[in-house]
Length: 263
Image (cartoon, rainbow, N blue to C red; front, top):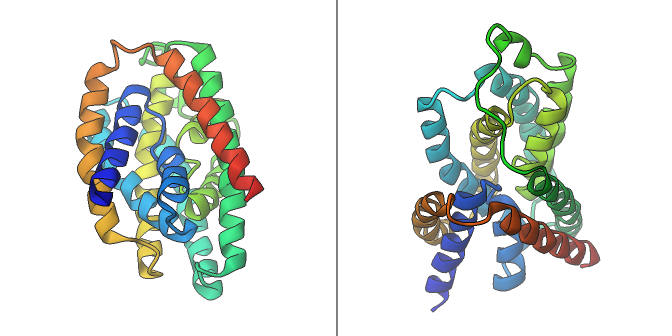
């Protein structure tokens, strides 16, 4: 019965990701902690690999459609991946199951969910995405940040946040990219955000696996549900009021964030 519950949880998260594009980490980690009493360090480690595998398919699809600005992905990865490795080294030295580390993870996750809720609500109120193409002759300028150091800095912050909580590479990442690359159309921002999340979550997830922070049987069950869920969600996207779902989702994420901070 528990196995079916995990598969259903994976399907639900995959469905929401397919419909809204909101990162699975912001949903899956709180579900594992609240509904299944999974220890925070195991929930985070397992969810990182869950996110990596679920976003791989989306990245391949976006790459084939040629909507990923690889320069943007490279800029962010240059900051986020080293930060993830440093965070993993600290976790190895302290121990991921350390009570103080667990407390830091749940509190940081709570604040990350509140930020994700705000970013999700903002996107819901903003409405439909802009055209995917960049104005002709503006391609290089659109993929150039306000300052060369900002993607490295924000990438490092997101890399640390993702490694500690598995949240941050979704709605928060999109909001950061909108600030850093104001000339880049929203669909291309979302595509870059999904693409750079794959190496980041893979590195962070494999790092957690080396610390013993990944439940492999649980990961298999979650993926068994999520992959069909994403397929169904992507086909329902045009028939479901995305704005309403995003608004409800932001309320749920805010509620989960407050509960985690209060733990």
